[in-house]
Length: 431
Ligand code: 4AD
Ligand code: MG
Image (tube, rainbow, N blue to C red; front, side, top):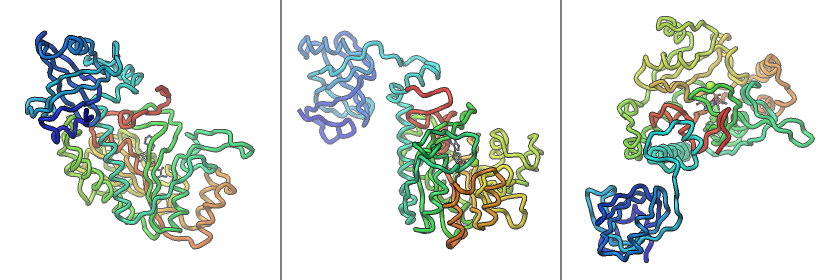
């Protein structure tokens, strides 16, 4: 018998085929029975009549429980009322793997329970929809850079240099060389590669021992980081708005069905069009004070500040030139106001907050060395990074987009832990 995927049934109307998958639901009147099966490509309903099938096949039907794996064989019919538009008139049911007492039932379960069963929960419709939006976003990211001639450079996960801040490093013993750290960013390495190729990006998992249990933080998350030679902070922000617009557009274009499954109201996503509004950090602080925040100049924006500020705009907003004291050592000092740096964050609307952090990089050897020393970092470890300023230094900029935060926003899900198949958080290493 030909085994076919459910998504391909339309090409087999009138033929007898076998579909293999997992049982979603069953129901029976005692005379006529229905089984809904999904195989990853789609969902189909099989129908069988007690008097038309041999007794063992009816018995096989009666043994089916949620998530039993089966091969069902029958004739393909068009049936507009059936999910997917086709139906199988069943002649055979083969039980491949029983599924007694599947833990996730159609009733409501608490989040803790669901995350304990994440390996099974992935099969549910909503979770599958999120996974497919993620798949689209990741492909869109790769296509965006490929189409614009950026070169992909894979950066190391085991690193000797702290990329962002000392406070949230995962360290592991590395032979005779002391500690290695799991990369918080690939940025320092793509800066080196930008001098080889001009336009580059890295895309991989990054690690931060975040002690906070917020809905925006994972300890392992995916980040895409482009880096562009001879690009300043202004060009960097233009690239960000083009990039975010492209990703959201791709999800809207190709993942309507999934967004519908997630009950995502897409009107705010449709407004994601360049140009994005821009506001300086200093103006943002004034605006926030009026809106009731207790922020003062010099402090980083908190999650609540980001939400409050983003509410003022109808699309993502670019906040630029933060105080240097709250930002990383590699950001270029703002020549017009040395208290600040030439950086920006991109804040997503609807309470999602920062999805991008980016900056023009410090290209002066002396200033960079001073910053490294000021932050108590060991210049010897950054010798190679400083070399980039000794041998043909160049204006360059880049940014990092957090993939899970972007997906959570596009999907409209409240917590980023659902935006990755197996989230890693401070209290979660299982499954
Ligand atoms: O702002 P961040 O720390 O910037 C960097 O790492 C730079 N090296 C990027 C660059 O310029 N190449 O992180 C960038 C983005 C954040 O805007 C956020 O979306 C995401 O990474 N992010 C996290 N996502 C999930 N969990 C966490 N703990 C995250 N920390 C940052
Ligand atoms: Mg940041």
